[in-house]
Amino acid sequence: MVNISALVSGGGTNLQAIIDAVSDGRIPGAKMALVISSKPDAYALERARGAGIRTAVVSKAGFPDGESRAAELIRLLEDADTDLVVLAGYMSILQPKITREYAGRIINIHPALLPRHGGEGYYGSRVHRAVLEAGDRESGATVHYVDEGVDSGEIILQGKVPVLDGDTPETLAARVLTVEHRIFVEAINTVIGRLAGKGA
Ligand code: GAR
Image (tube, rainbow, N blue to C red; front, side):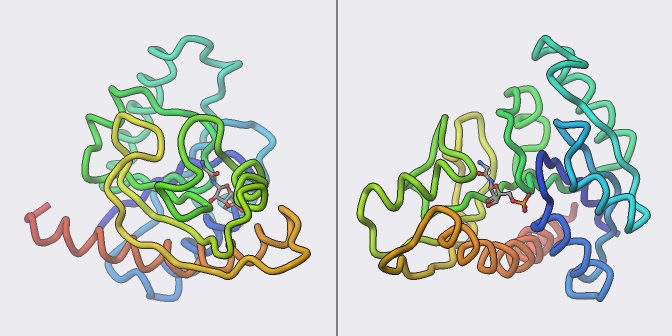
C-alpha cells in the first residue's frame, strides 16, 4: 500500500479529486494517510475530515522559523509512514531538508504550462493574471517533481486549455482546474508506477 500525504493551503478541490480517485479505485494500491495544512482555516481540512483522513496544521504562526517548521513537517510525514507527498494547492515554499528527504517522492501541481509563469511569487490567481497579461492563447496545468527550486523540478505531465477572449483570472482558473483534477490523478499513478519499478 502506498501512503499518500497531501500538503494544502486552500479550498482543496485538487485534494478532493485525489480523495475521490483513491476511494473509487482509480489510484489502485494507494491510501490517503495524512493531510497537512499551512492554514488552520483551509477548507481543504474540512474535506479531509469529511473523508475520515487524519489532519494536522503546520503554520508559519505556529512554527515561525523555517527549521522548526521543516522538522515538524518531516516528523508528521514520517509518523504517517508517508511514501508519496502531494502538494495540492500548497502556498508555502518547502525547506531543502524536506525536498531532499522526499526526492522523487514529492510532487506539485502548478496552474500554468511550466516553465512559463512559474517561480517565486507565481501562485494561485497571480498565475492566471500573468497568463492573461502576457496575451498567451493557451494555458494549462503542470504536475512536476519538487526539487530545491520553485516550480523547477522535472515535469511529469501537462494538460492544456485554450485562453478565450474575455477571460478573467477567475474564468481561466476554473477551466484550468478541471484539467488539474484529471492530470493530478494520472500523474500520481505514473509516480506510483515508477516507485514500484524501483522496488519502493
Ligand atoms: C490550484 O490551481 C493549484 O494549481 C494552485 O492553487 C490552486 C489550489 O486550488 N497551486 C499553486 O499555485 C501552487 N504554486 P485547490 O485548493 O482547489 O486545489
